[in-house]
Length: 66
Ligand SMILES: [Zn+2]
Image (cartoon, rainbow, N blue to C red; front, top):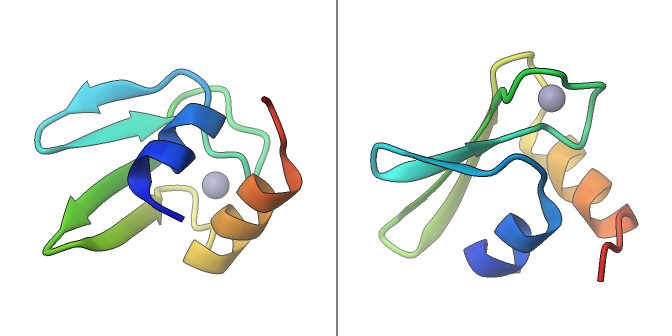
């Protein structure tokens, strides 16, 4: 999965610094707490509420918006 595919599936995506922030799909997020970044071709996902990378990816995989 590349970063564009992930950004398409997320809600409330905003550019922040060298990455993006969005609503986390792995918990009931009301304030964007998921940080999405790409560094050296490696995807970095971080939820400030504590969801793991795997939680976020599986939530994204289960969600088909288009
Ligand atoms: Zn989360």
